[in-house]
Image 1 (cartoon, rainbow, N blue to C red):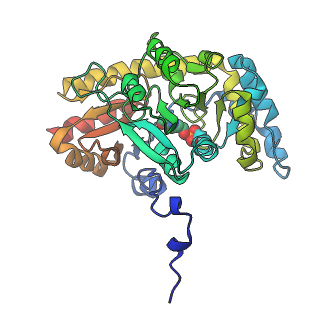
Image 2: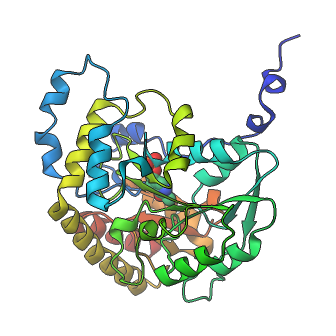
Image 3: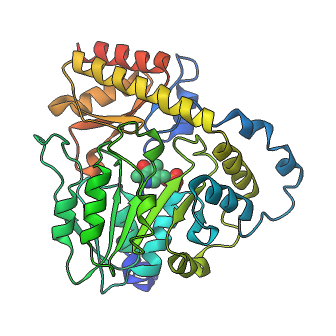
Length: 373
Ligand SMILES: *Cc1c(COP(=O)(O)O)cnc(C)c1O
């Protein structure tokens, strides 16, 4: 009898579905190399790339790659601490913020606990909750006719909290919808959440926000020790390929995360590159401003084509193509234009489109126009 390894596995691990990273991009790049090239609008990467300081400042690290990196990532933590005005003891570094989200669930969520999310939340939270054996509880998002369609509703999340709730997770602004809620609503939400319920606010896209009503939750940690904020270098800092992120929380929370952190979880290049990227505020400003212009432009062009687009404060837009969605996605794909299908999120009649340079965005619109005709 062959062994059924599933029966040997931790029950929480038996029916997990892996995170879906989208298409096989290296293969597609080869396939489209001779045409106009592959237009990659599927993964919310930063078309502006990282600060130029990153490339010029990495030589020392390249010369010492035979050494282990700083296990504590002290220099990067120090830089984050100075930049955001938070103590070093309140910072945990992750090999991407995905790792930190998994760690937080591992530390705090048990099979007796509920993890609360909203419909259309980032796909990593359900995986993190289930891997910890916790029960995932999902509340409704805003209805399609709301001013912030399909966005998270803090009141619904609040109403979803029960005696079993250990942790609430959401992104603001959110992926995959691009929607957000205001700092005032966030503050009111936190004031109403019981202090023994942890609130994880994922700010992967916060640097892209230009609407003054949305602000980071970081300033609320002092008043709410149950609040955890995660950030990443993958998006506005343009370092998705290196894997670096951080969490900010009460030092006692950070201490509890430390024992399960893998030794040297951030590599030497990532530590140094993230530090250099963080130091280049003008570059970040350029990325934010350029992205905001393209966001307005893209929303207007899609509207011209009669496509409904959700409000966005991120570097992507979620657009509704209705019954033709799959056909349009396939037709774009055959022309080397890759966007992100959304059926995994229960949004099968939408596509998520990463904002890129004007030339790339124009190619997307031209191809879409051809495909829709
Ligand atoms: C991209 C993204 C992240 C970042 O993940 P990394 O592991 O840091 O690359 C986190 N949360 C959301 C909502 C994202 O879209």
